[in-house]
Image (cartoon, rainbow, N blue to C red; front, side, top):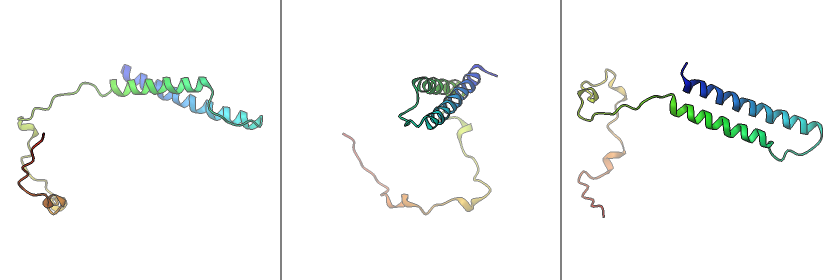
Length: 105
């Protein structure tokens, strides 16, 4: 188990605890006949911490990006798929003119 995965699990646990605390707080307010004006500050801090941990884990877990080489033979499609039923050639792209002499300023 990597560090990023552990941080992600911790973030989900913190978010789950914040949700449970908010539900428990609402139930307590219902018993005391008070209005719910928002979650307590400790729940808001838990939400921020849980979101930060989950975001950090989402950035750490996927790993390193690999570069795509445009002239590599591995990127080329050399054969058509076996099932040609889903290939569509009649689409809105034919409405565009073939010669587009647009000049950007």
